[in-house]
Length: 253
Ligand code: 13P
Image (cartoon, rainbow, N blue to C red; front, side, top):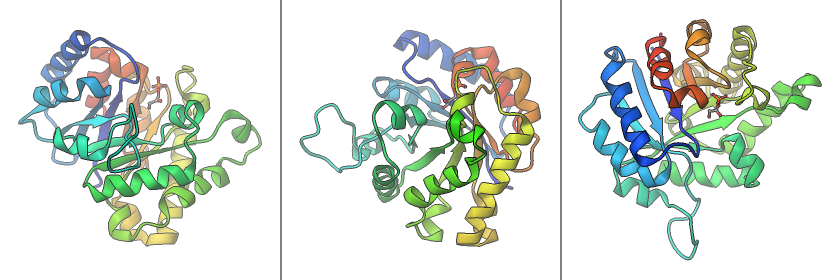
């Protein structure tokens, strides 16, 4: 079975103390994870080390960075390298979140460089893709998201792409309370798996976890996660409310 993943994206929220309390509560309350289930906490850079300490020794629980830079090291003031992440024991990084694409102009080609450097340093990228509202209204979402994958990922070998997690996050559903229906999520994610299968073969495509993101809450997680091609969620707002995120973890297949 593919890994089923509940990933929290705290974005730019919470103080250190609030974050530590949230981690303590969530870790104390969620059900035991099966070997096919994982929990990920994408926390702000300054909290990575504290979060690593909190999850230390827990199977299938990981801390993630919300971003990283595309270069190994050097004069890039304010940026964070994968080598730095690795030195903290961080094994996962969110790459290409729509907020990075929109506010920091991250292009598909630039994200390809970030994917490469993550893989070089054995950091699992959670690669985000998803269309804006105008594209959905024009019913061009499949082509749009396929193009994001082609430009950022399709230079990878089959061995490399198997190491990725993909998160489909329609931009119109992020932070809006307007979740994609489970049918819309399933349709797109089945399509993305087909695109992966065309390029890399069925066996590879079947191994890649594809998460849904966009207003995932305790009250819709069960239905979303029950879809065949929805292997969990990347969760923003509901991930910083302990009881909500615990329920979302407990909804994993
Ligand atoms: P919300 O869950 O707040 O809609 O955010 C989704 C998201 O962007 C996760 O990365």
